[in-house]
Image (cartoon, rainbow, N blue to C red; front, side, top):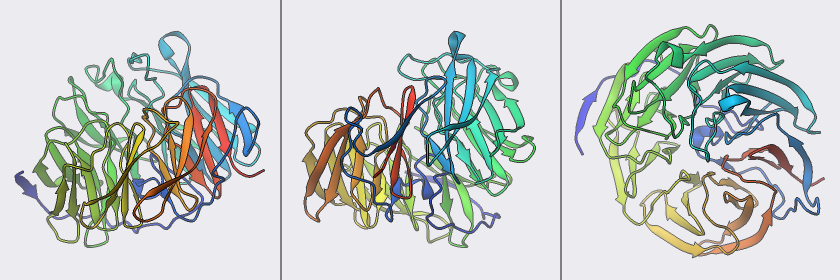
Length: 402
């Protein structure tokens, strides 16, 4: 591993606290943790037990939902070649559809049948919603469903795209929305003005397929920057200018995404590697070949790291990288969705809609319940209050005590 560049970051952004909003892929801090939430451990779609509501979406999608104020936001796609791209808002309390906006994709929408044009989880700053699609189309809407701007980034970059999927989710930092569009063609990351959609900067990236999502990370000064990973490097970028402020050669995994808690950045490689962000140039803390992320990203809750590996769940120590326990969970199979940690326990969904709720009892795991919702589920769930919002291929589900 060789560090190849470092400069100072210039952008100051305060960290926010946990709240009821879930504003992007894996929620607050991008670590899939909602420690104050207490959703029910057991539920049933068939019996309606602890299913507060269920709502069909206008199309299919594998993007995770957002919770923005009293709205649940979902993206969908449909029509010929999934060229119809939609953003929907549902009332979080009742499940009633509040609005839906459908546009025509400007870029190439082709994906693997398992994926969808509506693959990246949208992002929000609490006021605006930024929905990205595999076709490299990016639309900004306000909370009333008004279209603020729409960019066909695939039109500007016709060699950007993948027949598998472009599924990296956008990130918003201050006044900049950033998209990581990395593929074997025209591969890049761009920062756009969130109010106008104007491109502020463009950073060329290695021409390698990449499905991992970018992440906002804190620096010692209290500033936030953009973290990027690919199979060649780990990189930190100034969100305002696109300047690379730190980079190290590293073979990062290209499906699961990095996670951050406080000043500790955890990156999936062949195992996991953790970096300390308290110094100007991040320094390795530990490296583990026993803690491994597959498709689901690492979950950080308290001093623990959790890794879903199909029917196996692994817990590790955040400070040392040591494996604490490893347990097979009956009733669940392979998953794409990243689990979410709550006060109740860890909600682990597989790709068939089965969900195991697992409590960490220190040196072992306790399975509280295994439940099921109907339909394939590849999307990572959202948490708000004491509710889980799960997205199956064609529906949204609110899991909560009625």
